[in-house]
Image (spheres, rainbow, N blue to C red):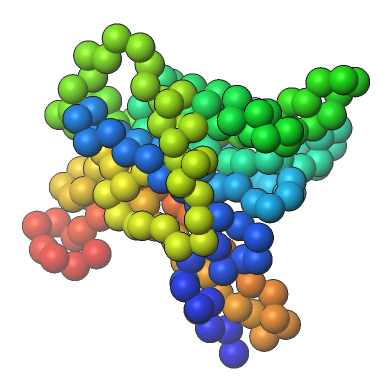
Length: 196
């Protein structure tokens, strides 16, 4: 019988860690998923206005078969820069895809739109590269959920959004984990009721 993992987090999958960084003044943040070693990832892109970086590399027919980290970020297109901060930090650690005498960290990213949530968006320099670097530095097996990381400024039509995670251990012993930043355009409840 399937059951939740010990932490009921994606980090119940051995070797995975998650880090969050938030800027409460801007009302935004980012989340980084990293592993002890490069790992295989896949992607399914939905929605009418997706914002991604390096997700085409995740197709099965591409040369690069593993990634060094994944980034979820607020900030719309500005938030894609969080992956640059993660890539810079990983490169200083010697991590990445070897190309001749160069090392290129592979860091796919996806963003959500939190630019009109009331935070101060009048930054001088794009803050997301810094947030990506901070989130990577915070990576651990245990991490916060809710209004943190990529979920800091997330909303729905009528409620706050946030960061969520879960895991399930299958009868075979394999662990499946999920990590999601919820920023839904529609209502999460039925009318004005409290029913989801």
